[in-house]
Image 1 (cartoon, one colour):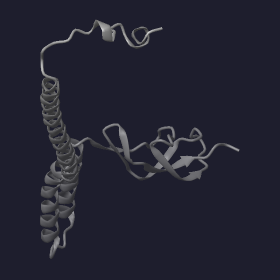
Image 2 (tube, rainbow, N blue to C red):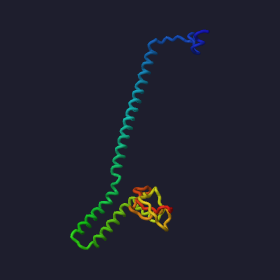
Image 3 (cartoon, rainbow, N blue to C red):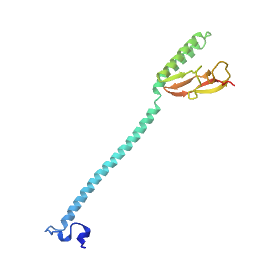
Image 4 (cartoon, helix red, strand yellow):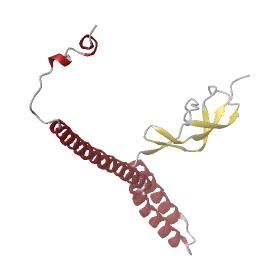
Length: 181
């Protein structure tokens, strides 16, 4: 077999000689190489710049998220500050007064104001007295016999629980009716 059969469809006998000098194709190749290299450098620079911008974006987004988390409680705290002010007023007016009736009514008003501020932000009290015990929402601190009460029923709430929207913020501490022996 000839060299033409193995290498390609073009055989050295098929080549036509031209009068073009031999250095021109090399010059054209060099120009093409330089153009491709310049284009490569341009795209490499764009890629580097894009990567740097993306890294800066990630840092900025992380910093913004951290700042948002840090100050997320601001609206709640702003609503609680008047409650503290009113507690201070109630305490200062209680000093030197023998009749606690006015003080108690003032403290009840302040407590209602605090409960309203918490409710405004989705915090609600959980008072499960008389309800069946739910370990997802209650924490049993004691079981005691209770004739006439269904077993595992909440008899007494030792500490009120709280929910934030649909999640337990603090479980209610409860006394539960013991099962009959």
